[in-house]
Length: 201
Image (tube, rainbow, N blue to C red; front, side):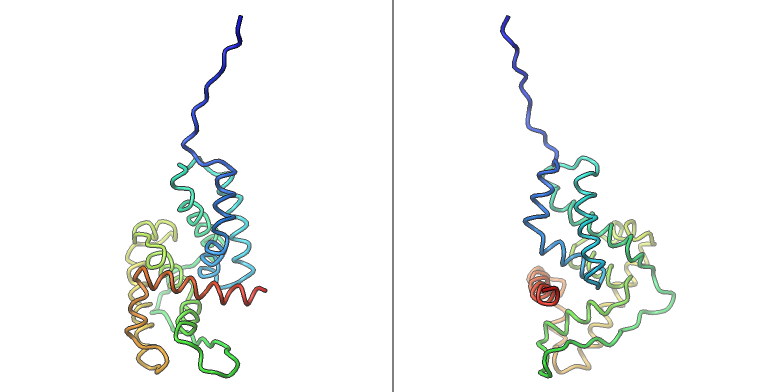
């Protein structure tokens, strides 16, 4: 009697190899996301490694969602590592300097330094809702806070950036207001990529 061949349909879910491919292809982008959230190279590396493990061993995810899920597990691990909490008082703008061999740093480097210098909660809200386009509700769930805290934090960040820009001749306010646009988002990540890879080399 002939042996019956079993026909298996391709699974719609991402498997280990799919996630490994995503982390391999998007390594720089995922690491930079982790660094923007943690503002620390060592913690960023830890979040990246944990993100790989969580994505590979986690719940089934459709292949089409593999890339967005990889970014989400990076965010979740960064939240665990930093545990950003809303401030009781209004956020403070910390002074951030960018070393450029005594020369005036480019406006983009000043902008990056300002983002990294934000207090943790404000930084997470900014990266998640502006750069990653998470909804306020989704952001509040991941951060374990009220939606109003997310809205208030983002408002403070925009106010702080605008205020800092108005006191600086190096960064025009109009340039900083474009941060939420698609073009500005990609520019910020591209510029940060060069800075991070140079620092870690």
